[in-house]
Image (cartoon, rainbow, N blue to C red; front, top):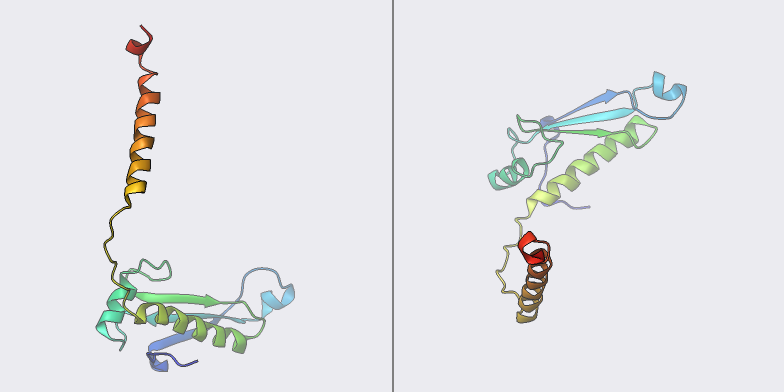
Length: 135
C-alpha cells in the first residue's frame, strides 16, 4: 500500500520484548513481541502533521511526544515487526490528512419545535412536584 508520507527507519526504535497472555512455555521463553518507539516531536514529518498527531490525545503518546506501540498479535518476531510498521503507518495516515472543516448548519424548524415541546413537557412535570402546587 502506498502511503502519503514516509518515516525513516533510523527514526524508529524497535525492541523485542516478551509477549503477554496465553501461549504456554513459548511466551515465557521467547521474546516475540515488538515494542516500537517513534519520536513524533523530533521526527522529520511535516510540522502540520506533527501538530495534529501531538494534539490528538492518543493514549500511546507520552508527554515528551514519543509514540509507543506494542505488537504481539503473532507468534513470530518477524510477523510482529511487520504488524508494528503497518500499525505505525495506519496511525500516520490518520493525521496526514487535515480534517474537513465543519460547515455550520441551522437546526430544522421541526427539530426546534420538538425541543420546545419536550422542554414544556418537562417544565409541566416539574411544576406538579412543587409543594405550592399541592396546596
